[in-house]
Length: 622
Image (cartoon, rainbow, N blue to C red; front, side):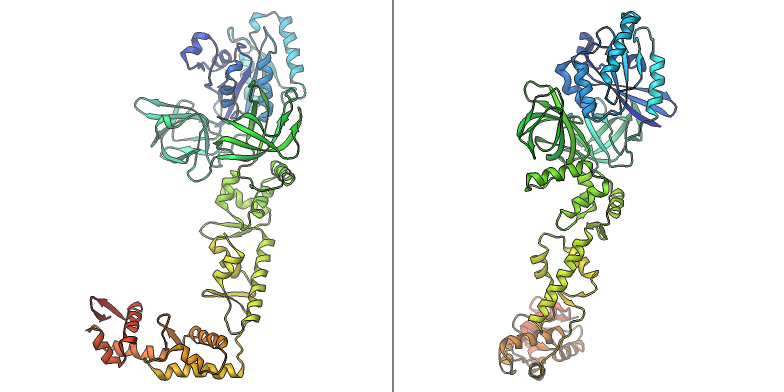
C-alpha cells in the first residue's frame, strides 16, 4: 500500500475543508466552534482510498492568519499540497503566506485547485486560472495541474481524484526502514482506552506492544494499540496518519510539539546549526534577532545567530546557529519556518545542518562547516562528524546525530573509508588518525626503552591518561592489537623487538638478589638490605628487583615482603599434605618455623590464593 500525505493550503473561506469533505466523505472540522463559525481553527484529518494500492491521507489546515501556527503544525509532514484558490476571490494574503511556507518547507509536488467555480461565470474562472498560473511561475507548482472544482455540485472532483492518483504515484514514500519518529499533533484521553496521541509518522514503523520514548524529556512508555486512518492495525508505517493508545503516561503529560521515538535513539536539541533563508518580502534579519521557530509540530522562540554577517538581506540565505528557548526533537535535513517576533508573520525558514554543534568554533569556520553539512552526502556527513570528534564515534552516536539507522551508518562509513572497530558497540575512527596514534604508541615505547632499559615498557594507564584522555578504554586495546610493532603484556606496552640486555655488573647483582631470597626461605631479609648489598646503584637495583618479580622468581605477598618462588612452593606442598586440617596461628608457626611477623602476612596471602580459608580465629586447609 502506497501512503501519501496531502495537505491543503490557502486563504480563509476558500473552501479547503469543504473540498476535503467532498473528496473523502469525511468531516475534517473536529470542533463545535469550527462547525458553528464555518471556519477551521485547528488541523483536520481525513483519508481517501484512491485505488487498492494507493491511499491519500489529508491534513486540512486553517486559513485564518491568527491560526498560521496551527497550519504549520500540520504542514511539515505533507508530501504534496493542494493549493486552494477561491474562484470568487482569487489570490489573497494567506494564499501567499501558505505558499511561501510550502516553498520554505521544501515541498516539491502539488496541484492548484480553483474552488467555488459554481459561484462565478466561466470567464471569471478563466481569469483566476491565469492569475494562479502566473502566481505559481518559477515555483515547484509551475506547470502543475490547475483543476476547477465545486464542492457543492461535484464538478471537477473526479478530475481532481485522477490527478491526485497520477501525482501520488510519482512521489517517493517516506522512509519506513528508518528509525521511527512521530511528531505529536494531538493528545487526549479516550474513555475505555486512556491516553491517545495522533500524528503523521514521518519515518520508520511503530507496532503494538512496542516500547517508545517521548522527546523532549525521555519518558518511556508502551504502545498498547495502533490505528491507521481510523482503523485498528498491528503497525503503522511512515507516511500514514497514526493514532496510538499509550500506557505509562497521562494525556496531560504529552502535547503538540513532542515526538515519539525509539527508546535511546534520539534526544531533543536546544542549539542547532542550520542554513536560514529569508523571504524576499521580509525585512532584513539582524544577528541575534528573536524569532518564532516552527518545525514539524513544535513551536518555540529562538535567537538567530548569524555566522558570517551582521544582518541577512531579504531574498538571501546564510549559515546560522539557532538557540531555542525549549528543546525540540530535530535531525539534520529537517526543514523549519521562522516568523517575526512582532508582528508575527512568516519571514523565512531553512534546513537543519547539525543538532549538536561544537561549542567553541570560529564564526568563519562554523559558517563553512554548516554549509558543508547542509549539502553533504551521507558518507561525507559521517566522515566529518567522526573526524572532528577526537576519538571517533560509536555507530549509535552517529545515528543519534544523523538519524541514519546503524546499517546505513556502516555503509556510509565504508564509502568514506573510515575504520570500523568491532566490539560491544561498533566504533568508527578516521584511518589517518588511527595510524598516527599507532605511530605515537610506537615512538613513546621506543623512547621509554631508551630511557629505561631495565623496565619492560610503558604502563598502559599512564599512556592512556596522557595521550587518550576521554577516549573509550577499548580504543587503546584496538590500537595495540592492530599494531605490527607494539604489543601489550599485562598492564604495559612494549616494542615487539624489545629485549632485556643486562650489563655484567647488573647480571651479577641480579643473581645476588635472587640468591639472598632463595637462601632465606620463609625468613626473608628486608628488601632494602638485599638491594643495598647487591653491588649496583639504588635505581638499577630496584629495576633488577622488578625483573625478578616479572619473571615470577620472586613473589610479592604485600608491600613489604617478598619471597622466593621455591619457598612459596615448598610451603604450599607442606600444607597440601594436611588438606582439610583446621589450625590456628601458633600451629602454623610451629610447622614453618617463622615468627608472627611472617606468619600473619603469609596466611593472608594463602587465603587470597585459596590454599587456606579463614574461619573465625582458625583456618582450614582447602
